[in-house]
Length: 197
Image 1 (tube, rainbow, N blue to C red):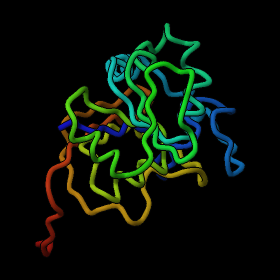
Image 2 (spheres, helix red, strand yellow; image 1 turned 180 degrees about the horizontal axis):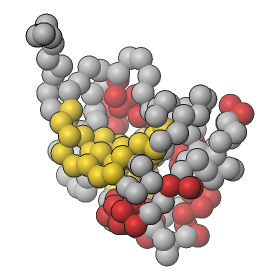
Image 3 (cartoon, rainbow, N blue to C red; image 1 turned 45 degrees about the horizontal axis):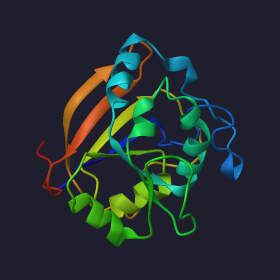
């Protein structure tokens, strides 16, 4: 079985929209694209290089459109995204000039992909796809970069309706700019009890 890992840059209020630049994703009138720019440092750069190593990718159609217009021309920075297989959940797209791209039509195809042999799968961006995966308990790991900003608007990582699930922190770092980088692994069911005083 292949592991599905969600990698997200996230604000304190849960926004994941447009982290990379002002023109990246302005849908819904989003005004704060590029909100991660002031927070890079050596720690962050080292961890990013690890995360950019070759993998396979599962993307929503909107994120795929953004990526396909940019990354084929910037292979020097992220060669893995060009070499790895891109699985794209889309009801409308069926072909692409971007090499190593395959299209999936529905949740059943994602389940089949997860059960297949192959590289682990990374999910970048793709808020609607992440919501779908969380609703159906298909996320094995969350790799979150939590930035010390509140935006008050934008697409969120989490929404109501996610399947209740417990996670264990398996790795964490804090950068010199205050970004918390945390990796959480799926760890069974939610446990509840009375809090002892």
